[in-house]
Length: 405
Image (cartoon, rainbow, N blue to C red; front, side, top):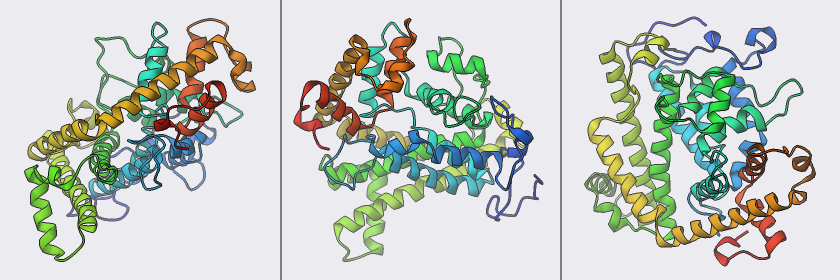
């Protein structure tokens, strides 16, 4: 693909691709190859990645997997699916402004949470305990396992056969993977089969996807926390950077209801963070002398991120959300119940594999640890609602906090 000359305002021209952007024509390819060398039809390699993710069963299942609240009463709370769509929207805005490949950025944003078990991080805790001595469970590694091995709609190979760049970006979801400690078993196996160059920084597209995730959940989870009554506006306004934006919004929209102003506050917060990331990332690229996609990986540091001041404010906001929403007493009780529910399911399937669906029984390995991991794969793929139904079939109605389906 031809690299166009940079416009005066980098990334703003439609069709502009920065020299440091990931180029689908220069992709390192796919684990199982692809007819025609990857050039096929009107879509680029990264567009096909995005489309394969969107059409996958694992992606659709996220519509009933918890983001913050487990199987909530209302239809207005976010799920893993709606969260992922919001991350993709934020990611594309940043990618376009920086002249990056929007399709790769979007694919990474859409796929980043596919490996989550039911009930969010509580589900991860349950499966990690269930696989104690069998390698444990890590949701980031399970994202790759799902995309590379479990989700297999094709006749010619396992998995979705995504590009190396997409898989690498997911493998380094939180930056380079240190080599001084053992890898999660799933990541170790997949990295051996199709090495991800784990010690280096990933593409700018992957870095943008990671910060877009932070921006989306930091701010949209505020909205859900307010809706649930876990937090109130006065608590938020105790943070100076939020109070400043609130006062500006009140001046712009006098006489507007508090509910609508609260939603405007969330939008304002997102815009503030997005604009900061764009400006800060452009500055880091210039300071590091980055010109090519190879330079991005050799930079030795994150190039996409918040400025020092906004980064400090974002950490304050994140700490507030953990203290008042994610670790709210009601949330902690629900999480404990969810851990117990999945623990009992894993024990039941381990003791009597005939309880598994026929296709999962047929593929059940004889030996450990593969046997325990296979059962965990089945449970990790469940939605909140399906896990609750399977528990009800085996043990009767779950606690009221988990019976909301």
